[in-house]
Amino acid sequence: IKATYHSSTRIDEPLSDKFFRNIIFHDTYKNLLIRIANLSEEKIRHGYTLTGPYGSGKSTFGLLLSGLLASDNKVRKSAEDLLPPEDLKLFKKTFSKRNNWVVVKVVSGGDSFINEIFFALQKSLSDFFGSKTPKELSNLKKPRTYKKLLEQLELVAKYVEKKNAGLFIIYDELGKVFENAQKNNIDIHFFQELEERFLRNYPFFFLGILHQSFEEYAK
Image (cartoon, rainbow, N blue to C red):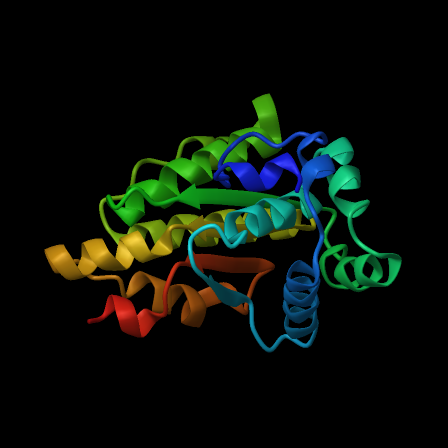
């Protein structure tokens, strides 16, 4: 068993080409990538959830996906080397229509999802653009409402679309957001509006990672 499976993985940790040398690309990952690629290619869906018990490799899959979309050529090539040629061809058919992807990697700590997404967005823009982050994106202020956060995400989506790039949010521990919302009566209509407002109108994807179904969090 490779070392990757002996410790927990955080999707917001820095990626390196060495990381992917320890990943086992098994049938579960293969089927997930194929499903996402097919549904995205047919424009059926751009928002997904991945549900499974602790230790089942969900976060590792999130890192694999972010590696396949990485703007760093060395990291992306290392992730691509894991895929059989026919699977890589299908994935590229869907996602290589864009030159690059801004990948926003969020790990919930059970606090404000608005702040969590905003700070992760800032980091992803810095990682993507470096010192050349456009002024209109580097000057974003911390939003006070989810409506303002939606406006900011739409601004980023529109900007990167003009650059023939895309925006992909991977939200790990998403269940903690729902638990916090239930406990503190917090409005999480944001996630529905994210889908309805512009997930299908821009090169914008969302993957939420959960440990149990939505129904369980609602109990």
